[in-house]
Length: 338
Image (cartoon, rainbow, N blue to C red; front, side):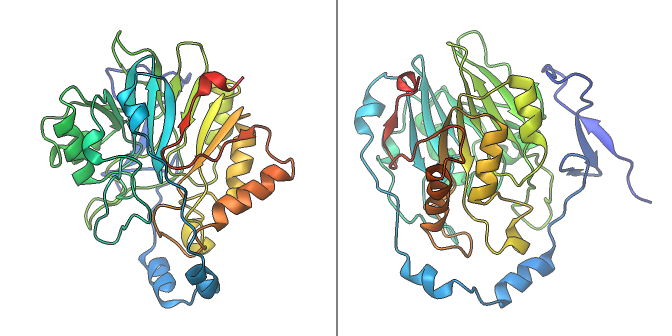
């Protein structure tokens, strides 16, 4: 007999969406909204055995993002946003430093195609670690261990189920979990509000942990009232419109654009550049920073294709907001974005 679904949330945190019952679970698995999504191993096998029609184009495409040193930013107290590659960002708000989804080192099957814009040992003074979900290209054990060791006041914020996963990586790291549409308790010293919001994705790190950790996105409301949205990993779904209805037009959106081919393998996990553009328009994003491309080889499209396709969309006037394509390590100062 199938397990009856139940709805869960962190009872210590407020739910901000009226009448939202919590995240649906069936047995040990979190659902993707209402649906229990379980990726099919047969689809993975088909991908492994199929020929990539862009194989030669991909082999010839050796493009990598430009990398500039961000040491001066790390040694300063200036506010700003810095892309460290893939989905990892540093954000300083009123002197408080946050890091999103750190994968700072290469590992088995996940080799960085470009260097960090700083030395790992320079990543100190970090106050908040934000983890959107548990996939290995967003959550790396050695990176978390290094950050925890180098930042004794570090606190982690992530989805339901994350604390158990982190316990094996950094046992002493304080972790606060939230379900979708919940507001974290970041304490009176934090110069922002922090919300955990939906994404359309899934979880797996091993053989027996399918969907045992939730996935989602983050929204920060900054001291001046502006919003910054980090979309995490996501496919196309209705949550973009729901988020816009809840928070209004978003000021800064960090949106994934890569790892979308072949579509039969990726379309339920990731947006392609055109879908990302549509999502950013639904969010009524004022400023757009793309991510999730160029750092790791995760899929069949050539390395430079995601950003080229997004720039074509923007150049065609089909993006409402202003597109910013920073180098890795470049400082974006959002106070200049009016």
